[in-house]
Length: 317
Length: 317
Image (tube, rainbow over all chains, first blue to last red; front, side, top):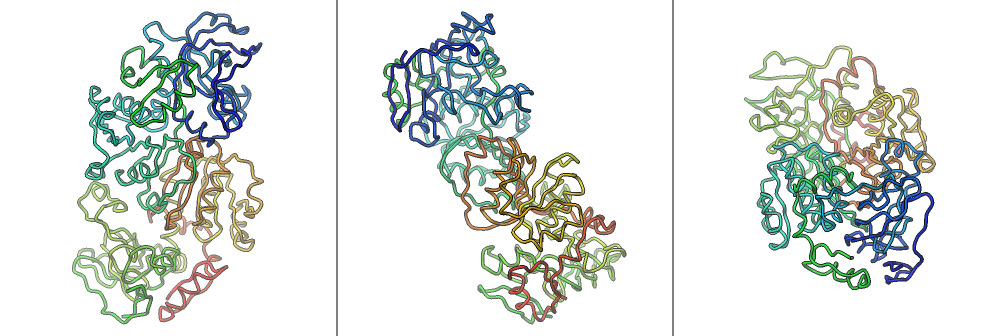
């Protein structure tokens, strides 16, 4: 089968054996989405070697221990745990110390014709959710996961920094909980994408004119400057949600965090079930985030394209 | 009167007018304590100019609007608010945007014969608390204030990093809530100070052998390396309490905070009333933290001494 692989510091479309598994489900990938994490891996920042990709929708071909899934259209949570640690016993493999992560840590990923995952990771996609929408479940869950960690009420004043895919989804999902969401970004055309969802948008250059009155700031730009802007905009005892897994060592003024008693909340993966519900109930707009759909055969070109200015989501199929 | 002042980038003992005030209480300072923040100010890191010092015990000489305080032995909360903002209206000036802070921000401090503070900042010292103990109320409140921000139960596994005065007080106060407190530091003799309080101590060089199982890590060393050690020792979704207001830009691996979904809690000042209760009930050991007591006239020498290796608290009287 074809697979988009990063090995020996090089990305290439390889022909490899179709996976077989007696303990996991084998899924034929229908579509996969390119995430910024894929780009970080290809830059060599994450120490991963193998098939990249972790956002997908597909159809189950085989599942020895979960035959009810065979033939079903599914998405899959990306953390596969040991099944025995304190985290796994709570049915949450996201922090299992022995976990593998689809296309990110020790497990071949989704930019391929087939992948395998434990059947317990799979969720059937409701008929009302298209393949194009379903491929967004993973980043949508990551965005909506902020609610697991920080209380958001209708009155909570929230600023999201970064108008890329992640910032867009964070703003959309936070706006389901709060009436006071502002999205800050550099790009007029990207900011315009959320306006139909009744979210205020502000260009980065104007952001410092905002009152320093926010209860919650979400850093989704992946830039050190985004982190510092968040500190500028939060009120004392405000919460800074860190979503971007930017690599390298960032500089920060720790004293500002202490003096203003800011809480910084690192936030990574969310749960898929509530995200599927959002899609099913048309509570978020996904379609306008897709810049282009390319064939898996053009995967190397697609990764290049995904890194270009102004490009949002690239889908492989 | 004599006052230890930092002006034009220079520390000196100056002779200045005794303060008079019609709106604030005038306090004759009995003893004042030298804090690391004083040392940071004298290094020019904090942009403060004036009389330094914020830890004190004294006797009220005048208080036009609160005559009941006159002649009383008092300590005083160091943040003086505007009295009208949302914080002040909750009787908490610690984050008033217009606040002054005794000897730190826009207000002459405690290393002087007299100081002034709003009468609402003062608390009478119970007879059972000595002057030597009372002068520790401010740092003790700062340490005990962690409980305001992070839930600590008897089972919570806590590591405190830094065996200086602040780390010592954090370990002692956290040990009142949790049975599982470990203090990590570089100095055998400083670690020994908490052992009578039934706190486990570990030398820094051995700290990486500790299990990465801590629910809460308190960074009280003021060093970038302390922050990174805290990240090493926390379990996923653990809480890192940042107590040190170290200045300059620290480097950090933000991705570790995101991947392990760590929460970083900036923590500054605590309330004085519960700290006075701890002293009154002999729940913390303070006496062994005093390295030396010097005359205010020797203030410049005392500040030098406070910065030397192995020295804990220096008291001025």
